[in-house]
Length: 314
Image 1 (cartoon, rainbow, N blue to C red):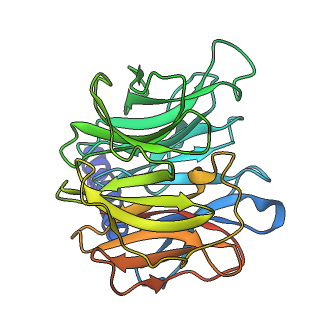
Image 2: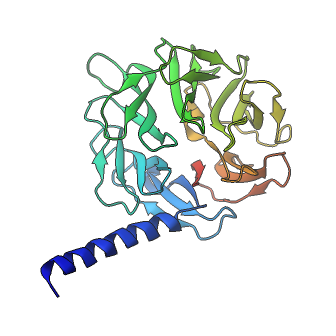
């Protein structure tokens, strides 16, 4: 067998292995979890019923760790927040966790890079400051090309702006904004950041917004007097519908310091269910799945540690 033939076979094996890895991730739920000792975070995978829990990204820095993990639409790549560089930065890697690199090379603290539907862009938020210390400043939402180039500030306000997720058509972005670090509203913007609409505009705090696969609905969490509730609404902010019962998720969590970063909502690929996390009766955060009409609530994690940032892998 010639050397060229051997090289071709090896390349085909690598491609097949990568394809198999991507397929194995389909319809899994990815989430982050406290390790216990040192309160570091690690990333896990599990089935939608809570079975087959496996560690995916291990902690690299004590009392810091890895979280905010997002698979690309083709499931070939993963982004996650990490302290390994050091300081909070965003890493991008192959989904088998080879070739781990920083997404950008700026000194600013950066978080939570979510993919556009075509996999060409990401939306994330970072501390915007003109100089050190780079962990103190105004949180702003940015888009960036998947190679880390062409950062664009799309929130551009003096508020605390966080989160960020694309609509299924890739033309709009949801994020949250607050002037006082307490009462967050859900903002819908175009990719340029020039056309913004406040979809909630209430005295409560609303966050963790995500589009349904068909783009017609938005799931989100509401916090009022330390009670967490799951809602959905039309894409224009109308027809707000509570999906969880009153007083179902009430704890003693302190929401006065932007604690909404612990949470996430995400729709199943067929749009029939929503996964989210909320405080249990012991005030630790667990993950739940519910039908999109508010029926059949199921708790799929149940530990004394916090499970956070659940995302349904498409």
